[in-house]
Image (tube, rainbow, N blue to C red; front, side, top):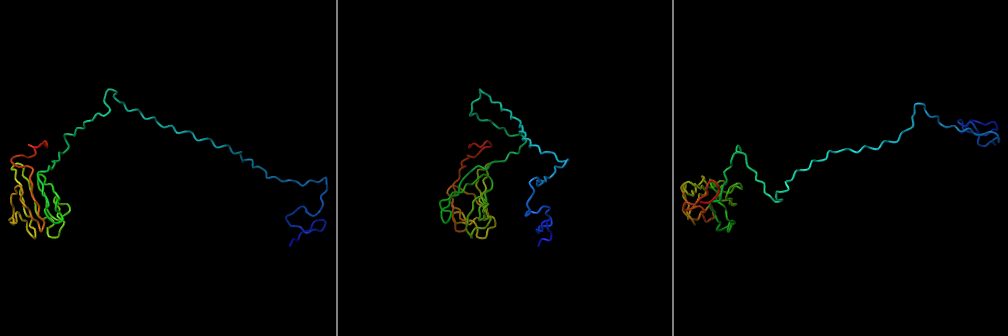
Length: 201
């Protein structure tokens, strides 16, 4: 409830200086109060447009106009890099029964591991072979394929005869590991083998 009265007895708000109900004199004008601008305030300037970032222009790659477009570039290996001997294929074991029937397993130079392990060179996925069941080694200087049992539980057989502990393989020998049989087919025989340059001789 307003507790202030004007000169004519109208109740008005305390903060009002003029009564809105009283008629105003024609000569008088209602003063308009505008907020004064601070002296320290400066008019805002429009933001400057960002400068474009200059990027270096890539230098063109020189191209030999006389060189053919599909020329092959020869990359020569460093003389200090160690040369890793490649294991060339020297024969195959071909599965005759079970889950490996019709599958061919390459026999490579050096030692080839036969067994149940997935990392073996010849993997036989069955519970009868051992993880590392046997080794098949090719000796190029002798031209020999040597099958060696690796202390397996069920033994290694060639033409149904157990090897104790090793045996040389010849063409069409049948190797049995567990219940799986493989036919042996050599590639390097009769003095033919891979030389150091990778060509068969």
